Amino acid sequence: MSGIIAIARRDLRAYFASPRAAAIFWFFLIFMGFFFKNFVHMFMQMTTQAPMMGGQAPTLEQLLKALFYNLHFILLLIIPAVTMASFSEEKKNQSIRLLQTSPCTALEIVLGKFFAASGIMALALLASSVYPLFTVAHGNPDKMMILCSYLGLFLLVTSQIAFGLWVSSMTSNQFLAFLFTMFGLFLLLILNWMAPNLSGGGITESILKYLASSDHLDSFFKGTISVAHTTYFLIFTGMFLFFTNVTLDSQRWR
Amino acid sequence: MIEVLGLSKNYGDLAALSDVSFTVEKGQIVGFLGANGAGKSTTMDILCGCIGADKGSAKIAGFDITEQPIEAKKRLGYLPDVAPLHHDMLVEEYIEYAARLHKVESSAIKSRVDITIEKLALSDVRKRLIANLSKGYRQRVGLAQALVHDPDVLVLDEPTEGLDPTQIAEIRKLIRSLAGQHTILLSSHILSEVQNTCDKIIIINKGKIVTQGTYEQLATSMEAGHVYKLKVARNGSNALTTLGRIGLNNLKTGSTPEEIEFAVGAAGGDQILDDVARAVVDGGFGLRGLTLKTRSLEDIFLQLTK
Image (cartoon, rainbow over the protein chains, first blue to last red):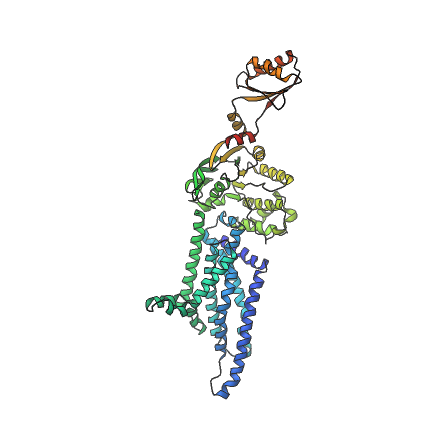
């Protein structure tokens, strides 16, 4: 246990000791800001036009939902940047030996790295809450919906981090780790659109659709916490953490 | 303290280690000597649990490194050939991190870090970034990492590699001062280093242990008796023929005709030396010197790994 804390603390500090954390926060918030500004602009336009056209005015919940959907795309670039260094860098500069020769199990090492990466993303998500808070200050959105969305996003982020850690544990090249993580996460995102083309329908299609991360987020964005979708993210995270553990352990035998 | 039994390791078709066995007693400093690529680092990596062996076992303080890795690693400090440093950390931060990783009691961490910094003379740089340190200091920080949890066994892979002569002397002195309280296995391809610091020497070549023992044991086992060097003032060739009549083994001329080398068997050596001296004086060649030519570790090493 003390090993997990030591590793997590060091890694978390390392993000801030280099420009990495700053860059991650910057890109995350700037891009989210672009989207937010655009959506607010559209929202204002539609609100004023709706009565004239005789349609329904958009709700703030719809605005936020659009914002959160787009966050999924931003995360495709952010998460690989967060996880790429976790193992690759340590392997490259040989500091992994310190972990390997310390009385810590592979699981402690994996969890330490996982908590550090989750910590930095939790902070990033926290910082990103300025945008929803802006809508709360100037309107009356459903606050439960915002909280649920954030829970869903956090679960998504942890599952993506687990995947990124696994990729990072397999290479000493940070660029490859970034690329493969991004590709894998992108595949998961678009899997439910591609599922009909990849399979002949039936059970294969439903399995592929189940694997896609985007479908499971929907219910969180609607403001409900469902056990099934929470379980998906937890299993996904646990599975890839387990894979990372196996990869790390097996490297001792090569 | 360290028990290695029948280690074998293959990298593909290349046999990096075959049937390596040795033991290191408590408090000893043992030198692991071999040319580059002889299998030193591989042995040490296996011993420290970084990589696995194909066959054989390694025990640290009685704990098998594969069966009970956590217990074994608690008693182990390892400085690999490249010090495992985090360049973005301060020296004291890094040492504290190493202490936490090695499960030092949280109440003892501060004092252990201070003691280690003191011991390795790192006080001047404790608030500096590791990235900004010189190679000698980085090596010492690497050693600090291996020492901070006060391990029973220290494994050092070429600890003086790439340092300047002053730093080498300092590190050697440091290693000597650690003997007794820690059991130390250090590797090197520099012979004089091992000769100066170690109680016992293990010579490894192409993945096999060639020989092991104390320096004196190795030196004696390598030669039946001693080689002496005789220096005369004049008429070296005549002296050679005169000495030939006494019946000396391996009689030959050295680098100049006035230098003569001969071997003396282990028994009856003193008598022969008297005879040689008398023959030189009586023959009027002018005795200038009669010295025992000890063989350096280098000779032994070259002969063994030929």
